[in-house]
Amino acid sequence: MADDGARPAPEHLVVGHISKPHGTKGEVFVWPLTDRPDEVFEDSGTVLLGDTEGVAGEAPEALEIERTRPFKRGVLVKFVARDDRAAVASLAGRYLLVPMQQAGPLEEDELFYHQLLDMEVQTVDGTRVGTVREVYETEPAHLLEVEGAQGKRHLIPFAQRIVKKVDAEHGRIVIAPPPGLLEL
Image: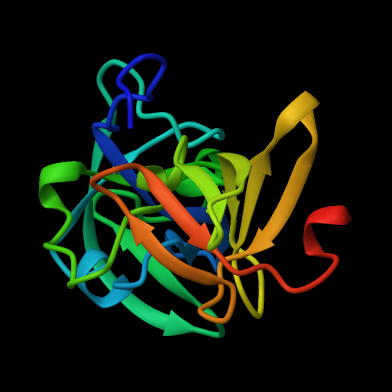
């Protein structure tokens, strides 16, 4: 992949979104945005407070985790020195981050989503489809938004049956689209 126009690697990874205060004792409900919530949201751990767009800013506030507990499909988090609902009310809608170097090593064939951005997408026969512009976390499979010729946008499921190869070294994703997918 060429360096011209490529996005720089981020300094921080988004790991959670603070939905709202929970109860009266300073807990917040966090939607984990990581495959490793137990590692990130552990008692005595530290996360950084981002803004409502997931940006850390110049000097992000470090929040020490006092305790956590699973709740529904998320995590209830209590931060040190934030002991009541009023102390956490302003956190609602903001993102939690960790420095890139704090993110554990990836498994073989595992990538961070930001690494998929700007990758070239082509079919197994070598036909260029376009460039990855965004990754959407959806069920049952995540979606790659790919911008093709004349600004045409394709939503391609990031599923094993379609994505045949991800070559991070060369910035390329090879797909075998089912009939009609690229015509939508």
